[in-house]
Structures are given as C-alpha cells and as structure tokens.
Image (cartoon, rainbow, N blue to C red; front, top):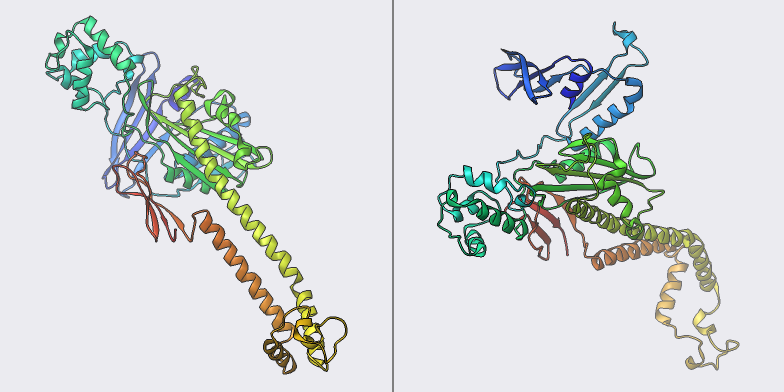
Length: 509
C-alpha cells in the first residue's frame, strides 16, 4: 500500500535493503509497481559488502501528504503496529520543512517503539483448499481436476483438499452415487459430474482447517504488545481455533484490557487484519458492531466510565474487506461475527472473574480497616475493666449474681458461668503487668490479621483458586485447541492438541 501511495503522489520508486543473519552481503533494490498489470518494475539491483553483519530489512519510500492533518493517524498507526508486532522495533523521525539544517525545531517529531520480545510468529506453511471453498468458487473443481496428478477420484479428494482423509474420501465418492467410482481417473470426470462434486462439497460438513497456513501474532505476543504500549491494570486474551470462512482458513485473536496510560474512558477499539492496523471506517466494522451488541454490564464492566481497550486481530488467507479502501470488515459475515463475539465474550468472562476477586479483596480490606479502627478503643476499655477488677476486693465472679452480692448466694444464682481458674490467672497477670493495654491491642491486631487470612483462603478455595499461580507458555504452532484439563492435588494441566506446550495452573486445588 505504501508503494502504491508513493506511486500515486510522488511517482518515486521504493528502495529496499535486506540481509539474512550471518550473510556477508546486503541485497539492495530500487523498484516500483505497474499498477495496471500489478507487476513490479525493478530499476536497480545490487549486492554490497556487509562487514558489520547487519541483518533485517530497511525500506525507504517518499510520499507526499499533509503532515499537519494526518500526524495523529501516522503516530497511531505506528503505535498499533508496535502492539501487534512487539518483536520489532520502530524508530520514526519527522523533520520539519524549515529545519533541513538539523538545528532543531518544535515541529520535529521523534518516536521510538522498542522491541519487547524475540519470539516471532511461526511462518505459514503451504496448504490445500478447504472443501467448503467449492461453494464460493464454482470453477475450483474444474481447475483441480484438470491439473491434479492423482490417478483416482478417491486420491483426488484426499490429496487436493484439507480435512478429508482417505476413508472420508471413499464415503464421499459413495455419496456421489451412480456413475462415480473411487478408482475412476479424475480426467474421466465429465462436466456434469464435476458439477455434482462441487454441489456435494458445498453442502457437506467438514472439519475446520488446521490453520498452519496462517501466521497470527499469537496470544503471547499480543498480550506483550498491549502491556508494553498501554500498561493496563488488567488484561484478558483469547485465541479461537481456526475456522473456514468462505473456504479460507481464518483465526480470530482478541484481548480486552481495563485501565492503562493514554486510554480514554469508554471503549477504545483497535482492529487488525493480517497484523495490519485498520484506522478508518471503524464504525461499520464487525468488531465495533460486536462490541456495541455485547452486554458488558453482565461482566461487571462499566462501558461509560471504565477505560476499556478492545483488540481484535483477524488473520486469514483472504480477508473479506468491504469496499476498495480495505479498511473494514462487514458485519454481514456470519462466521466472522460469531467468531469475534465468542472471542470477546471469552475475554470479558476472564475479566469478570478478576473484577469479582478484586472486589472481594477490596471488601476484605475495608472490613479489616474498620475492625482495626476500633482496636485501640476496645483495648483501652478492656484494659480499664481488667485493671479495676484486679484492684477490687473480690473477683467479678463473686459479684455476678442476682441482686446484691452476698455470702449466701450460690453458683446457680449467677447470671453467667465463670471459669474461676481462668479468672484468677488473668487477674494475676494484670497485677504483675503481663497483661496491659499494649498487649491486648497487639493480640487483637493479630486476631484480625489471622481471620482476614483465613477468609481470603476460604474464598480462594471456594472459587477453585487455592494458592495457584498462572504460568503462560507460548505454543509453537498455530493450533489452539486444548485437551480436557487434568487435575492433580498440586496442579491443573491444560495441553494443546498436537503440541507439547500448554498452559499450567500451579498450586493447590
């Protein structure tokens, strides 16, 4: 897009310099694009020495535009790009037109977005068509039948499509009915038979694609990018499994944050398509519509006063943009709308748990604060009572009777039962100075602390938290389907299907 914009505004080519790690030379290109043919025009190609072992890619492009009007959009774009690619570092510098000598000017702008991690998304792998693609592309079957190297129809269905194993391919051939055979050659399939295959694949149900052909940012990187740029108080993330949208694999990644720096009250929606920020026409986007439809109050989130950040990244081999601007995805796409809605609800549910726990902890702290406020008065009153009882002629137990104390009163006449041994022991400690106002105050504080800790532990155990600590390990692949949770007295274990890495919750259960 930057090259096309440069071509339309200045007409100048783009300069590219790149080198791989440990490469002894740098590759340099000067090129532009033939917009009508959609082909590159290479003006210069060169290799230069690389003595300092530099590696990476550097692109230089000259674009004409109104900096005053679009300054905020450029900086916002770079910031969002830093969120979704925390493994990259961006250094942006703008020099005002009246400061070409470099003496400094108030209009100059410098922004540095530092790298937060060295972990990069896994590169995509080559994949075959998903069977549901036949519904959208009616010429697909004809093209594949004419180009396949498979010798049988069963092998054709198994090898040319994902989500179809050999046994499933045999059942599909049987379903096609009369005139079809598992061993027939694909080149012998007539046009009418090809239409029948296309119809069957369009309406049959298949397992979703594995997502290996996609390269999403990843839950780990997306969280790190948000934490680096916004520093939110709370954050929740979710990555949905790969699904087929109009025959194309698609993955939805989402994060919802509360609080943070430079975040306005209300909803702050950040949209990404194939790790590219989308800045314009957000009101019509499927993400914005899903945010508006969701009942946030059910998740303890105040949509008017809380600083809510909503981050949704959609990754696919074909993003179904609306319009030629490619700035938003329509809400009429049911598969994407449902996937975004699930992701947002999963994040909101995680945040609700954190909010409820925080509110419970706040209530415990408030209760402890109230109790602690009255400890000095209680200690003073109890100490005064014990001191007066210790100085009296007879202990309180002998005065705890109906009416006036008398020698003829019996134990049955007492208003309450008294442990005389304990009474004598306490009064003795008061007389020798072992029990004072200070000791009573200290013991009351210890008791309040102990009760607070016991209630906190009881709350955690009731909510199945125990003394657990969440440990996040980033999966290597793009599959995000978890196996059932394995419980043990010391830990709970969740593994990714087909992957040795997972999420662990360590501690008592």
